[in-house]
Image 1 (spheres, rainbow over the protein chains, first blue to last red):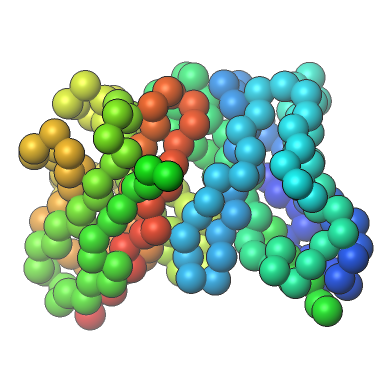
Image 2: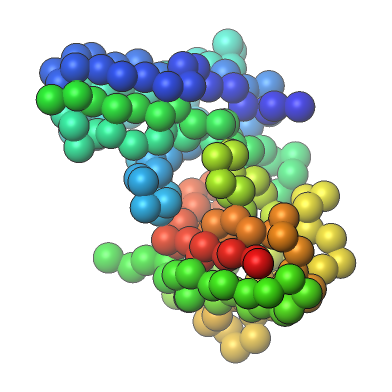
Length: 110
Length: 112
């Protein structure tokens, strides 16, 4: 079973485009996390959300708790944004372990 | 800025051998985690550790796996008798609160 679903799985965009990645989850959560994984494999935390919206530079993350849905937006995309973006949720029912989505592979073409 | 470190970055071992993967969490963190990612698949939870004991573990974390915090700084994952299917990237994470985790760079384990 997949506690976290992401879409799309793969995304190719032209530099400068506005990008949206979606995440839906089915478990009760304490927080939702957006992570970035570069080709070398390392994982970096971008956002942790429990409500509303957060912005960091060109990245914006929103969450709708009632609908169990979150979106990650990238404005004015750049080739250096190319990476896998992973949605993960931490659930209080299971020691706050992360449940991970399968990731969205983003390629931004110059 | 404090960070989680992991050693080695790449470990190659023969099937049946024991491996120990090492992690140094951020110093004032209290919660520790191991995850793995088989090539091409999603990241999966293995185990969480708090107050010197396992707090949660997944079905993957069977008797072949163990974790330890031997000296108050290192956090290790031991695989007793490696199998081919243990080949994966293993990530350590630590957290100061329950909710925000900081990930290490990963150890790529290759079992031949």
